[in-house]
Amino acid sequence: MPLLMIDLDNTLVDRAAAFRTWAELFHRRYVPADPSAVAWLVHADADGYEPRDRLALSVRDRFGLSPRAYSELVNDLRQGMADHLEVDPQVPAALKAARTGGWTVAVVTNGDVEQQERKLRLTKLDEEVDTWVISAAVGVKKPDPEIFRHAARSAGTELDGAWMIGDSAHADIAGAYNLSLRSVWVRRGRPWQEEAFAPTMTADTCQQAIELAVASSPA
Image (cartoon, rainbow, N blue to C red; front, side, top):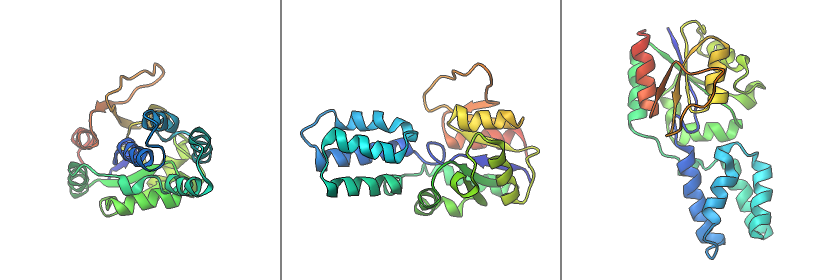
Protein backbone atom coordinates (compact mmCIF):
# COMPACT_ATOMS: atom_id res chain seq x y z
CA MET A 1 0.00 0.00 0.00
CA PRO A 2 1.34 3.47 -0.83
CA LEU A 3 2.47 5.65 2.07
CA LEU A 4 1.07 9.11 2.73
CA MET A 5 3.18 11.01 5.27
CA ILE A 6 1.70 14.15 6.78
CA ASP A 7 3.10 16.83 9.07
CA LEU A 8 1.16 17.66 12.24
CA ASP A 9 1.57 21.31 13.26
CA ASN A 10 0.05 23.81 10.83
CA THR A 11 -0.81 20.98 8.48
CA LEU A 12 -3.17 18.51 10.12
CA VAL A 13 -3.89 21.01 12.90
CA ASP A 14 -3.81 24.81 12.98
CA ARG A 15 -1.10 25.37 15.54
CA ALA A 16 -0.77 29.05 14.71
CA ALA A 17 -4.42 29.70 15.58
CA ALA A 18 -4.08 27.71 18.80
CA PHE A 19 -1.06 29.74 19.85
CA ARG A 20 -2.82 33.00 19.13
CA THR A 21 -5.81 31.87 21.21
CA TRP A 22 -3.46 31.07 24.07
CA ALA A 23 -1.67 34.41 23.63
CA GLU A 24 -4.97 36.27 23.91
CA LEU A 25 -5.80 34.42 27.14
CA PHE A 26 -2.32 35.15 28.50
CA HIS A 27 -2.78 38.82 27.63
CA ARG A 28 -6.11 39.08 29.45
CA ARG A 29 -4.87 37.21 32.51
CA TYR A 30 -1.40 38.59 33.07
CA VAL A 31 -0.84 41.82 31.11
CA PRO A 32 -4.23 43.32 30.18
CA ALA A 33 -2.75 46.81 30.11
CA ASP A 34 -0.21 45.93 27.40
CA PRO A 35 -1.91 46.31 23.98
CA SER A 36 1.13 44.90 22.16
CA ALA A 37 1.28 41.64 24.15
CA VAL A 38 -0.43 39.32 21.67
CA ALA A 39 1.52 40.56 18.66
CA TRP A 40 4.77 40.32 20.63
CA LEU A 41 4.03 36.75 21.75
CA VAL A 42 3.15 35.61 18.23
CA HIS A 43 6.34 37.15 16.86
CA ALA A 44 8.49 35.68 19.65
CA ASP A 45 7.03 32.23 19.08
CA ALA A 46 8.36 32.26 15.49
CA ASP A 47 5.62 29.90 14.33
CA GLY A 48 6.73 27.34 16.89
CA TYR A 49 10.40 27.26 15.91
CA GLU A 50 11.69 29.25 18.88
CA PRO A 51 12.93 26.74 21.51
CA ARG A 52 10.37 26.53 24.31
CA ASP A 53 12.82 27.12 27.17
CA ARG A 54 14.23 30.20 25.47
CA LEU A 55 10.75 31.50 24.67
CA ALA A 56 9.67 31.06 28.29
CA LEU A 57 12.60 33.14 29.51
CA SER A 58 11.93 35.84 26.93
CA VAL A 59 8.26 36.05 27.95
CA ARG A 60 9.18 36.15 31.63
CA ASP A 61 11.63 38.99 31.11
CA ARG A 62 9.41 40.92 28.70
CA PHE A 63 6.40 40.94 31.03
CA GLY A 64 8.08 40.67 34.44
CA LEU A 65 6.20 37.53 35.41
CA SER A 66 5.99 36.31 38.99
CA PRO A 67 7.48 32.87 39.78
CA ARG A 68 3.98 31.37 39.82
CA ALA A 69 3.03 32.93 36.49
CA TYR A 70 6.33 31.79 34.99
CA SER A 71 5.71 28.22 36.18
CA GLU A 72 2.26 28.26 34.56
CA LEU A 73 3.78 29.66 31.37
CA VAL A 74 6.37 26.88 31.20
CA ASN A 75 3.63 24.28 31.65
CA ASP A 76 1.51 25.85 28.91
CA LEU A 77 4.43 25.85 26.50
CA ARG A 78 5.27 22.23 27.32
CA GLN A 79 1.68 21.23 26.60
CA GLY A 80 1.99 22.76 23.14
CA MET A 81 -1.31 24.68 23.28
CA ALA A 82 -3.02 21.33 22.62
CA ASP A 83 -6.16 22.35 24.51
CA HIS A 84 -6.74 25.12 21.97
CA LEU A 85 -6.21 23.05 18.83
CA GLU A 86 -9.06 22.61 16.39
CA VAL A 87 -9.23 20.29 13.41
CA ASP A 88 -11.00 21.22 10.21
CA PRO A 89 -13.72 18.54 9.97
CA GLN A 90 -12.80 18.01 6.33
CA VAL A 91 -9.37 16.71 7.37
CA PRO A 92 -10.56 13.51 9.13
CA ALA A 93 -12.90 12.90 6.21
CA ALA A 94 -10.02 13.19 3.74
CA LEU A 95 -7.87 10.89 5.87
CA LYS A 96 -10.63 8.34 6.06
CA ALA A 97 -11.12 8.46 2.30
CA ALA A 98 -7.40 7.97 1.70
CA ARG A 99 -7.20 4.97 4.02
CA THR A 100 -10.37 3.46 2.62
CA GLY A 101 -8.79 3.85 -0.81
CA GLY A 102 -5.80 1.75 0.20
CA TRP A 103 -3.32 4.34 1.49
CA THR A 104 -1.30 3.96 4.68
CA VAL A 105 -1.21 7.27 6.55
CA ALA A 106 1.65 8.24 8.87
CA VAL A 107 2.11 11.46 10.79
CA VAL A 108 5.74 12.60 10.66
CA THR A 109 6.42 15.41 13.09
CA ASN A 110 9.26 17.13 14.84
CA GLY A 111 8.82 17.74 18.54
CA ASP A 112 8.49 16.28 22.01
CA VAL A 113 6.81 12.88 22.28
CA GLU A 114 4.44 13.70 25.14
CA GLN A 115 3.43 17.02 23.61
CA GLN A 116 2.83 15.73 20.09
CA GLU A 117 1.02 12.58 21.20
CA ARG A 118 -1.23 14.70 23.40
CA LYS A 119 -2.17 16.75 20.36
CA LEU A 120 -3.01 13.60 18.43
CA ARG A 121 -5.16 12.23 21.25
CA LEU A 122 -7.05 15.43 22.05
CA THR A 123 -7.89 16.04 18.40
CA LYS A 124 -8.67 12.32 17.91
CA LEU A 125 -6.34 12.27 14.93
CA ASP A 126 -4.72 9.22 16.49
CA GLU A 127 -7.86 7.37 15.40
CA GLU A 128 -7.62 8.64 11.82
CA VAL A 129 -4.05 7.58 10.95
CA ASP A 130 -2.18 4.28 10.88
CA THR A 131 0.96 5.34 12.72
CA TRP A 132 3.10 8.31 13.69
CA VAL A 133 6.77 9.11 14.10
CA ILE A 134 7.95 11.88 16.42
CA SER A 135 11.49 13.20 16.13
CA ALA A 136 12.28 13.02 19.85
CA ALA A 137 11.37 9.33 19.87
CA VAL A 138 13.69 8.35 17.03
CA GLY A 139 16.55 10.81 17.52
CA VAL A 140 16.33 12.51 14.13
CA LYS A 141 14.34 15.48 12.87
CA LYS A 142 12.92 16.44 9.51
CA PRO A 143 14.45 16.98 6.99
CA ASP A 144 16.84 14.14 7.94
CA PRO A 145 16.05 11.25 5.55
CA GLU A 146 16.12 8.76 8.41
CA ILE A 147 12.91 10.04 9.99
CA PHE A 148 11.04 9.26 6.77
CA ARG A 149 12.58 5.79 6.72
CA HIS A 150 11.40 5.35 10.29
CA ALA A 151 7.89 6.26 9.15
CA ALA A 152 7.96 3.67 6.39
CA ARG A 153 9.18 0.98 8.78
CA SER A 154 6.56 1.93 11.35
CA ALA A 155 3.88 1.68 8.66
CA GLY A 156 5.21 -1.67 7.46
CA THR A 157 5.74 -0.39 3.94
CA GLU A 158 8.34 1.22 1.65
CA LEU A 159 9.13 4.77 0.63
CA ASP A 160 8.71 3.91 -3.04
CA GLY A 161 5.67 5.82 -4.25
CA ALA A 162 5.32 7.74 -0.97
CA TRP A 163 4.15 11.33 -0.65
CA MET A 164 4.93 13.95 1.99
CA ILE A 165 2.49 16.72 2.90
CA GLY A 166 3.51 19.66 5.05
CA ASP A 167 3.70 23.41 5.51
CA SER A 168 7.46 23.71 6.08
CA ALA A 169 9.64 24.19 3.04
CA HIS A 170 12.77 23.33 4.99
CA ALA A 171 11.53 20.36 7.02
CA ASP A 172 8.81 18.76 4.91
CA ILE A 173 9.41 19.62 1.28
CA ALA A 174 13.22 19.58 1.41
CA GLY A 175 13.06 16.26 3.24
CA ALA A 176 10.90 14.78 0.52
CA TYR A 177 13.02 16.32 -2.24
CA ASN A 178 16.22 14.83 -0.80
CA LEU A 179 14.67 11.36 -0.99
CA SER A 180 13.13 11.95 -4.44
CA LEU A 181 9.65 11.67 -2.93
CA ARG A 182 6.67 13.57 -4.22
CA SER A 183 5.25 16.28 -2.00
CA VAL A 184 2.45 18.77 -1.48
CA TRP A 185 3.23 22.06 0.22
CA VAL A 186 0.44 23.63 2.28
CA ARG A 187 1.11 27.25 1.50
CA ARG A 188 -0.86 29.00 4.28
CA GLY A 189 -1.10 32.14 2.17
CA ARG A 190 2.66 32.34 1.56
CA PRO A 191 4.59 32.41 -1.72
CA TRP A 192 7.16 29.72 -2.42
CA GLN A 193 10.62 31.26 -1.98
CA GLU A 194 13.13 28.43 -2.30
CA GLU A 195 15.12 28.17 -5.53
CA ALA A 196 17.03 24.94 -4.95
CA PHE A 197 13.98 22.70 -4.69
CA ALA A 198 10.20 22.82 -5.00
CA PRO A 199 7.15 20.76 -4.06
CA THR A 200 5.46 18.55 -6.59
CA MET A 201 2.22 20.42 -5.92
CA THR A 202 0.89 23.16 -3.66
CA ALA A 203 -2.41 23.36 -1.80
CA ASP A 204 -4.31 25.87 0.29
CA THR A 205 -5.50 23.36 2.89
CA CYS A 206 -4.51 20.00 4.28
CA GLN A 207 -7.68 18.46 2.92
CA GLN A 208 -6.87 19.70 -0.56
CA ALA A 209 -3.29 18.43 -0.23
CA ILE A 210 -4.46 14.94 0.73
CA GLU A 211 -6.90 14.85 -2.15
CA LEU A 212 -4.25 16.00 -4.64
CA ALA A 213 -1.78 13.32 -3.55
CA VAL A 214 -4.38 10.55 -3.58
CA ALA A 215 -5.74 11.57 -6.97
CA SER A 216 -2.26 11.76 -8.50
CA SER A 217 -1.23 8.28 -7.36
CA PRO A 218 -4.24 6.01 -6.98
CA ALA A 219 -3.61 3.13 -4.57
